Amino acid sequence: RLYGTTIKQALGTGLNANLNAQLILGRLSLTDCKNGVRATDLSTIKIDNLELTNIDQGIIAYKNLPEFGGGYIEIVNYKAKNVKELHLVGQGASLSLKGQAIEVQ
Image (cartoon, rainbow, N blue to C red; front, side, top):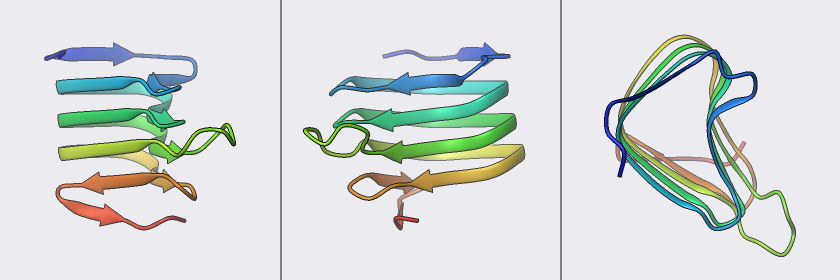
């Protein structure tokens, strides 16, 4: 479990989980990244407090490989500033923001 983590100027994704990974974070701050948080292929990301600043795509969950299921992301609380697209959820994936399920887009 990580707490108080800050990632700045990531060229791709600030926090990426794939292939059945399990990540649990207390507080995560992402600044000036192309993508914020991404979960694919049966991976799970749980974050208590997320801060996104100057991000193109904030929270992304989807299925990449056909032999796996989609990723799952649970965000208990978040703040977003200058985020072009807050979330993107693909078929077979799921996202919970502040206790509310976000539909597949």
